[in-house]
Amino acid sequence: MTQNLAVNFLSKTKNLEEYFMTTLSISKIMIDSKALSTLIGSYIFILSGGLIPTVALIARLNSWWLGISSMTSLLIGLSLLALSTWFSHSFAKRKYLDYASFITSKKIKLKYDSNFLFAYRCDKIRNKIFSLGFQDTDFDDLIEYYSRKSGNIKNKRWWPITLAGLILFPLWSEFIGKQIEKGLGAFLFMIIIAFVLTYFTSIFNSMLKTILLSKATKYDELVDILKTIKIL
Image 1 (cartoon, rainbow, N blue to C red):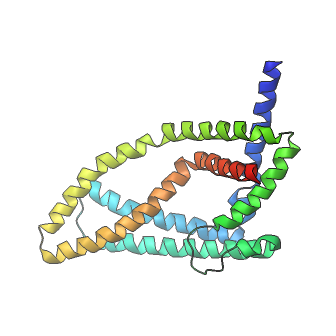
Image 2: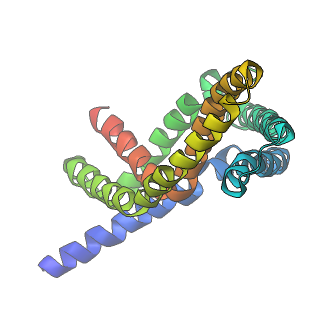
Image 3: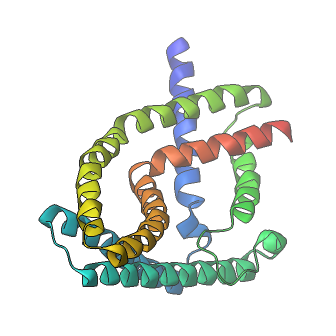
């Protein structure tokens, strides 16, 4: 009997998980063909912009045009990302009229509208939960189950990024030191580069988390939705 309860619970949680990650994914809800093509282009340019200074550091290349090329590539990538997001929001406004008030009207935005996605997913997940046979008393168990799965993924996948940061930091420091030795002009230029790279590093960090911790992030989003539905 206990085994049947476990199998039943795992089967239903897997069904709920697949529904959330597939049917309720951003690609299924918001992204049309125009948004997808510009999104792919933005990723290519942003990755190129991040790889140029990394290769330059490893190969010990000191040339101003590498920095210009990196910044240009990153700017093009961010522009395409903003355009892709705008396409997605326009598509969502036309398709989900009941949720149009949640969708931002800003023309320049680098992230998908979280308020719209959250509201839409809450309604869909609530219906799915009860259609699977879960009861109000099962919410705490579901929250704990998906929270534990998220934590396990984070512990296994993020440590290589931390190690890579520890390895690259001395190389970057050495590169900065050499540029400062060239004079005041190079020093001021490196200050500007440092501010720009700090911003783009945060973007790159978000992309890495999207790639490596995408499933853990999905579990966290599902947990937040379950917590909200629980109090409704």
